Image (cartoon, rainbow, N blue to C red; front, side, top):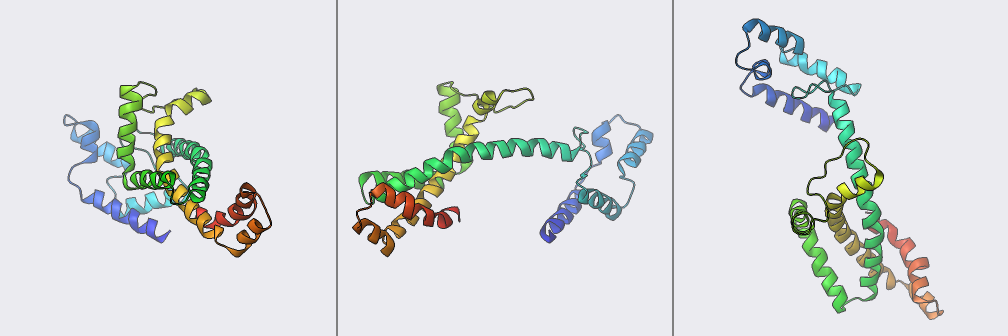
Length: 229
């Protein structure tokens, strides 16, 4: 909370130091001085900077961040609309990435040092080391521009069906999936390999427990903590 307060102070007063007149930018160069004074008074720009900051802060505590200078809309509403889109995108990516990465992590752990394991490690490291925006550009180039399978711009609007939302946000979700899956697969692989060397796993194998049961019943439940971390 203290960090957010400090950041808000820094940003507010850095903007305050920028050259230019907000009222002039809103009304244009042809605005009269009387109109400029009226707008400054309406926007509170005639008050000292510290008074304006404290006024904004008192509203921000109640989740009232004021109105946008550009659109005139409520900042809180603008943020909430984008937040819901972000939440949907995160859930979309998680539904795909989590089960797939766990399954792949278990497979490469069981096939440790095989060709499949080495290829999976190289591919996952490539995704981890690549910036998300670069992966996004590559996906847009092939899936949207070259093959035309999905839209290049994920523009969302009210009234869209659930399947339309899935289609429009597929490429952003796939970008997140590739990065998250690479991290989680490697974490799953490391956790499973470490657990397979545990005495209770060896005991389960000696008792003749099937390999899939050893993984599902004994290894995976104890691997959740390191995977989630």
